[in-house]
Image 1 (spheres, rainbow, N blue to C red):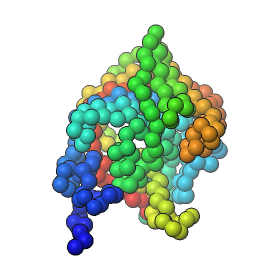
Image 2: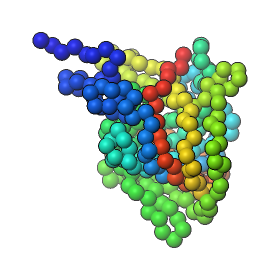
Image 3: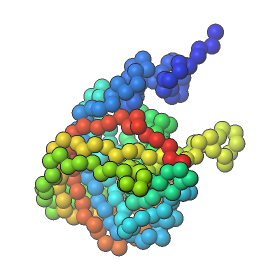
Image 4: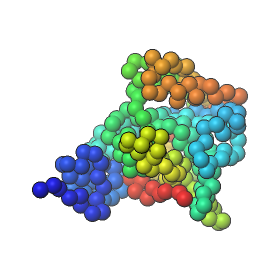
Length: 281
């Protein structure tokens, strides 16, 4: 007799073996089992000013670029994650400030263009459940020597990004600073995404296609922060170098770097399961 899917339970393929444990669901289908954890995170970020028109070309439907055209590239290393039973993984994300104007919702925040990760499990759960634009790459630990921090990203041996941070100095972070709130006029705040899932057999059509919001996280306890100088380079790739990602890397390579906007290193503790992720209409 064929099995039936349990109601109000999160599934991922393959469904044949029961509900899959993940960041928003514990073993056996317990929702919210890892709602808050004590993961340790180190984030290295470099920002630069580019051309507004270049960012507009990367906007999905319903979005507009807002403020200065500043791109931020962030490489993050996480450990002691509860839903991975204490293991961790690394990420590389590219964002700039945008606004979504929908028929019902209006939201402002960093638009996450792409998020590379070096582990399959968070890629699958983040793409299918949350609508993050996640893909895979290799993200080794940074090399720190002579006052410089060097982060890299590669895919099957082809290094497509170099990030360097120098002249870093620790700065004070106000203790207990309140999280930014949604605006009085109803404008939502958080990280913006665009979810797209193709419809099998009807190529060019979508099963799912809509904007998504990650509501603002509460502040972590007593983060440490350093500020300084930084640079980031995306290396032009041939199709032979990155058969499924060359167009992503080359679009980022083409962004003009008009001026650097500094670099940060942040150490923090704590994370959420993003179960409050929401569709924007």
